[in-house]
Image (cartoon, rainbow, N blue to C red; front, side, top):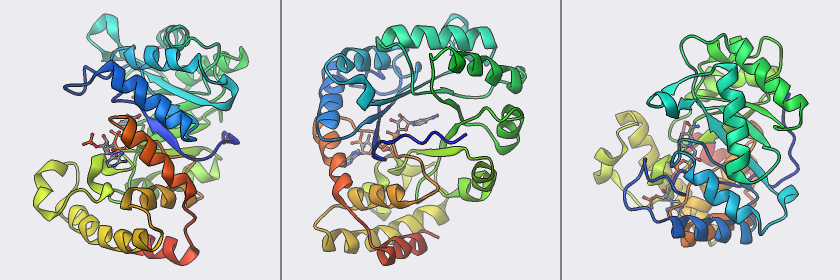
Length: 296
Ligand SMILES: NC(=O)c1ccc[n+]([C@@H]2O[C@H](COP(=O)([O-])OP(=O)(O)OC[C@H]3O[C@@H](n4cnc5c(N)ncnc54)[C@H](OP(=O)(O)O)[C@@H]3O)[C@@H](O)[C@H]2O)c1
């Protein structure tokens, strides 16, 4: 079932909060500062995972949470990488239960708003994995059951009892595959959708141009070229709003009824504060459609 949080649709991705195993030259203090900057500027959703710093991101968020009203915030985390077995993926019910309990400790809270199985494994019956999470939901330890990086077939298998609430998958204006892959099923089954890499790792901030092709190897040539052209459309709309390309992109996701909320990642406090300005943008229907067309 859909999650129906009453929060604004802007969240913060936190893989650069304590994610020392994923990114070079990160400082914990920047993580603390960017979280506070984002929350103080009106962001109320945080998306983390065990694998971001092998628990460090969750610990830093847990410290910061103590200074905010817990019930005002949506906290999402994920697990599937087993630290006792070289981060091998596992969805075993026992492992998921231990992961939720350990995440609650690191986050210093008594419930998670969303817990995602971060990646599917190859062997566990997905229905049993989700049934274990349903138990945790009944106990009040998690409020919503999520899946991340599951194919449509895997989502269907995991949702045989109708317990799945939310799916997080790679999606951006430059990479819209999820629209054709899983959105129809999610809508039919009232499952929410959260895109990750919404800024396409910086490309959709307008900071880069055609010469930076090599930095964005995830995209096909066709998607990259379309994005470079689309950014000019975003720039024009941004100028009319006295805003930036980043704000307009985020406003487009927030206006999209198929998207539950958006979780751009920030590297420091200045970026987090800046991201929050997207909350002030109201796109007209005409602008929304213009952007939609430019990236199709
Ligand atoms: N479920 C999954 O498997 C999965 C996978 C990946 C990510 N995620 C989640 O999704 C979140 C978002 O993904 P992401 O952070 O990797 O990519 P992203 O949101 O597409 O891009 C984030 C990057 O955009 C740039 N940026 C952010 N704010 C900016 C601003 N105000 N002005 C200019 N540039 C700005 C920064 O680039 P620079 O660092 O270069 O400055 C930042 O690192 C993650 O934090 C994580 O929570 C989930």
